[in-house]
Amino acid sequence: MKMPLRYQILLLAMTTFVAGANEYILAGILDLVAPGLGAPVALTGQLITLYAFVYGLCVPVVVALTSHIGRRKVMITAMLFYALASLSTLLVRDFWTFVPVRILQALSGGTAVVTALSTAASLAGPQRQGRAIATVIMGFTASLIVAVPVGREIALRFGWHAVFPLVGLLSLIVASSQRFVLPALSPAAAIPLRAQLAFLRRPAVLAGLMVTVLWMAGYVMTYSFLTPYLIGVQHLDGASISPLLLAFGVASLAGSRFGGSRTDRHGYHATLVASKLLQAVCLLALPLAAWLWPSGSLYGAACVLMMWSATAWAAGPAQQIRAAALVPEARGVLVGLNQSGMQLGIALGTALGGMATQALGLAGLPWLSAVLILGSLALMGFCRRLTGPVPALQ
Image (cartoon, rainbow, N blue to C red):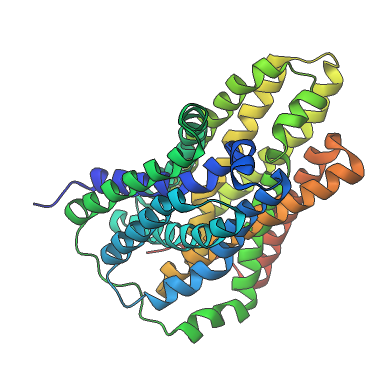
């Protein structure tokens, strides 16, 4: 019996939720994992960077090598390997034994996510693909909102070794559900690996992916250091940070959903222009809030942060669709490359944010983030002027 489309899309969102959990959870329990590995926090934190780089550089190759296999089979296999990697953390005793586990988590989780996004666009069709992709992306934001605090509570009560195996069990449940809920999906476009990697030599494709890298780097540069920024620059009380971050996450869910609907109605270009301009305005408003309320204002900061979160995540679905439309006959490959661009943007933004914090202090981060966001918008406009509008997917 064929399942309704909404259940299929929700299962794909659950796939990205579980796949995003391992990437986000480690950041939330870094201070607990480091002593368990017998490594300093700075070194343990490189496991986050490792995940992003492996995802960004290697997942497109895996997606290309599996393009001749049905997408449902690819997703199920990826989730099974993801479960194996998560359960293998029970055997981790030091930093170096965690490295291969982290690599397998990135490869399998990233492959599942890329396949889920391209599958959502294919199942929904051109009229509803924005909302479908937005729903699947909401799995990521939900993992940020739910998985990180829940994972930390589990780690505090039962130790960090208990966290990742639970993600592994969820992965097994998702893989089993995919077998019965999703249709037998056809393979992605059968394009040889060399031809797929050759897309990166096309100036329009490379510039289009750089739009994603700059956009995500601008977001992450401030977000990665948001807690110390709010305490040190906005002068907020530490007890108010958790509810503020929760509100930030809820706003990201709403923004992603709104961005998907707006993309379906007005197209991805108009959505990206509006969301990136508003995102830059919100980032520039953060220092203004600190100047207006030098002793700290929870409500002022909350208002600006929620607007920033909503506008930032509203660009997500439109950015995915724009990337896929660069080469419509190989949309799965371009979705994978766009996901890689996001991960490389995460690595770049975190690295630049760390260097900027040491050189200029925390107060300058929103300004620099706004520059990167506007740079992403300018590059997008340059690409449109050079090659013309990217055609909508059919």
